[in-house]
Structure formats: C-alpha cells, structure tokens
Image 1 (tube, rainbow, N blue to C red):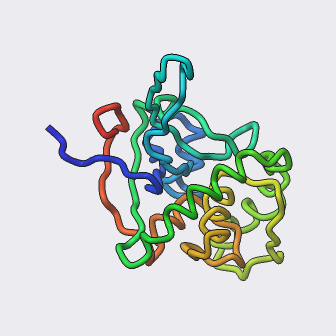
Image 2: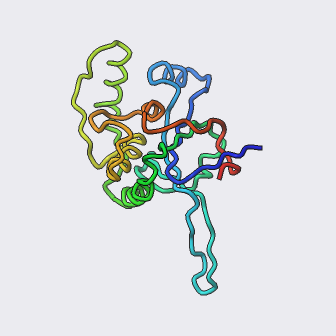
Length: 192
C-alpha cells in the first residue's frame, strides 16, 4: 500500500513511454515529459444549500485544448506521472498559487496558445537538439500552453519555479531547483 498523498500545489508531469512512431519522435525531440498540470487538492462543492450538503472533489488546474481550466483530477487517472512539490522554504506561497490558478482559469483570455508551439516551442527544441542559441525572444501573453499556465500561476504568486525569460516545457519543472521529486507512478484515486 502506498502512503504518498497528493497535496494542493503539487505539480504533476505526465511521462511518455508509448511505443507508437509519433510518441517515439516526440520523446526524442522533447524528452520523456509531455504534459504538466497542478493539483488543487480536494475542493468542497455545495450540492444542497438548504440541507447543508457538500461533497469534496479532487480538482486540477491545467491548460489543454480549451485553455486554462479547472477540472476533475479523475480525468487523469491511469496516466503515468512524476509528482513534484515545492521545497519547504517556499510552501508558504501555495495558498496564493492556488488563488492565482482559480483567477487564471476564470479569465476568458486564458485560451490555449497554439501559436506558441510554432513560434517558440519547436524552435527551442530544434535549437537544443542542434546545440544552437535560441532563435527568438520569448514573451508571455494571456494565451498559454500547459507549462506556461502552471508557471504563470507561480510567477503571479511571486514564486519563480522557472525563469520567466524562456518558454517553459514540462521537463523544465522536473529540473527546477525549487521543486523536489516526491513520487512517480500511475495516477489513481488512492493518491488523493
């Protein structure tokens, strides 16, 4: 039995071990990490105000095809993940990080940044593979891929887990000195 439990503010990075040709090429170019999202913990939802009934659901914050959203953590059950946690000396910033995640997911401008993939991510990956300097200057905007959205809520909370001068990739979180590796395996309900 596993004693590890997810905490609010934990960063989860999915691992790509698939064998299909596209996944192999993606892994060769970008590394084994392909998506990043953040645990919001169990959030209380009032189901019946008259009867004072509430339920608690484990939720996550991420940017996917629709943009920055909050959704059920159960949507990610069954995926292999690496779980990272802020080092103890930075954990006092977690309440602000969670608040910023809710604000960003509520912002109608927080849509998915497909253009970032073409203009910054692909050039960054190619430059890294060919050992060249980065070809273009990265600038943050309201549209965000998954790694930008997670980084943005930390930056707004004044916890710089990654430098704001580069477009972040999911693997950058694994290498962040402010985060420590806490668990790896298949995400399931037992971790909540």
